Length: 320
Image 1 (cartoon, rainbow, N blue to C red):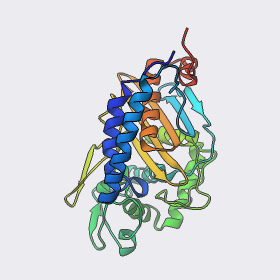
Image 2: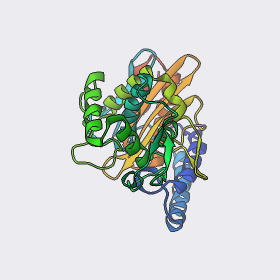
Image 3: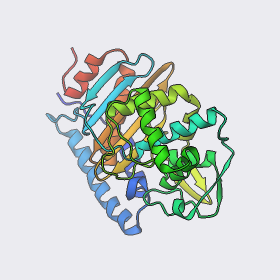
């Protein structure tokens, strides 16, 4: 018998409202016409979703993404996996690796968080999602890292990569060396931003490996990822991770989208002493991606030591 997941409706509604502000390249802003059009589509979708919830005999249990993995961060146990080794472009999940390398340099004392980085015209003109940096200004490293994490700024990521690596080519080489060192077996990075590039690929399992290594090495990095609102030069932007503030315990980590990858999300959460990590990739919509991640996190906290029970949930099987 189908169980209506009415608890998901407030989260989905909030996510839809946020989507109106974030419909363009890789979590950026769209035009007023795009927002009005999306609002109409979102309203229709929400009504249809509520009606579907009321229909018996329908199963909403399956994961509506191409690939997913859920991990108990305390034990390292994989609680759920769906096509976890499928190759998918990482999109802006790439920025987690870029931030990892930057945090390594900060910890080593080679860069200070208050150091101001000069923004060149080339950096300011990087396309896609943006922090809206201006050529000639100098921006503290801490603000650039926040801009990468919160608004997925490609300009910020480019500025950081050039300061950390000397140039993008050397930085990308370091990204791939780091990936191998931490056990990412099926990933190749081609740039520090996640913008489309031939051959750039990863998997949900590799992204979970990256997230765990990143937070083990730099637990304080969450301070960049759980900022709900980021203001730069008078422009206020919400965190692209819609689960922050919507799902109890969620404290990070990173969103991403390109046409080729679909909607991707790494999300971390902690309730009491239990920590969960979910990665969903290849979603067909932001709403579907976010709801899939939310349901994984909730299932993980409900059954933190039982992969079998979680597998049953998403297979649509009734627990005995």
